[in-house]
View 1 (cartoon, helix red, strand yellow):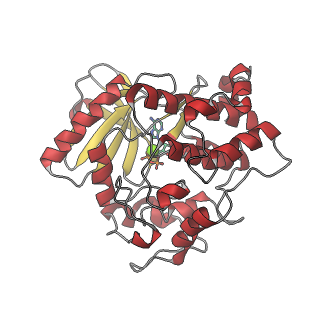
View 2 (cartoon, protein in one colour):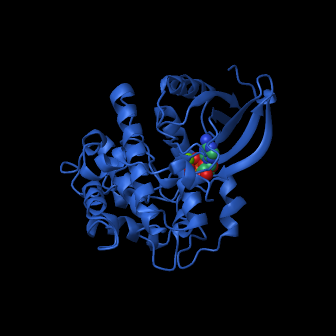
Length: 335
Ligand code: ADP
Ligand code: MG
């Protein structure tokens, strides 16, 4: 596809994130339906072109566990990334609609994400860097795929300059400034799986939900590779122009607030909690032991002890998921 903005007709909004919005569009010349993600970039023209070149390798990322890529183009001051539409949306949207997700479905999510991560790393040496339920998508064919992985170092840099990514799925070693590895993605997977199985973000207070915490996303500086020193180095970047309006204001945060340019302690407390306290667990006794122990392995605080996605593919709970006959397609018909 030779994608140009004027050839894409907006059909529907699919979602809003920190960095921009995602719309369902039709590519008029071919009739192809796509998801167009608009990312506001703060970068020089030369850097923008570099980002486009880097995004190009997404054309080579072909796996049934990875959302497929149609192309990207510049539409100043944005970069538009066009990908496959996943008509059932993201798993965070799904659990917020239907409640806690059945543990056997969560097992299928774990399998799909591990397969996707293993593919990205083994074939392309790509580390995802942003594993969370909103980057796990599902369609009515019953396919589960991951999206929004960090293919472009320049894109990661440019986004970090304008707004800041999610921090609450971040592993303890990343919070403390260590390099990203595939094992950091495994931590984020563990947190995400608990969230899906419980129907709430595991670190949130009982009455608060994940959207409260996501109000704080964007408050932490820098997911810049290698540049993040420690908790003490966190600072408050300028608010992105978008976040002042849009959905953020509609949500009144319960308990945590970020106003007047000062950072409440809550986000720091959360990060300190991740670093200092025992990792969260699935509620004991409510779930199969195999699921509990798999998640415990994802959430080993010592990255040296934590397994890689490829190693985790051999774990009993995942082996069981591979041979399961559960019908995800039928499940997607229920909502
Ligand atoms: P985030 O992942 O932080 O929520 P994004 O801008 O990446 O922010 O995405 C916003 C929302 O758009 C997602 O939560 C998801 O529900 C929806 N979305 C993203 N990509 C797709 C896609 N390819 N198909 C369907 N929905 C999508
Ligand atoms: Mg996303």
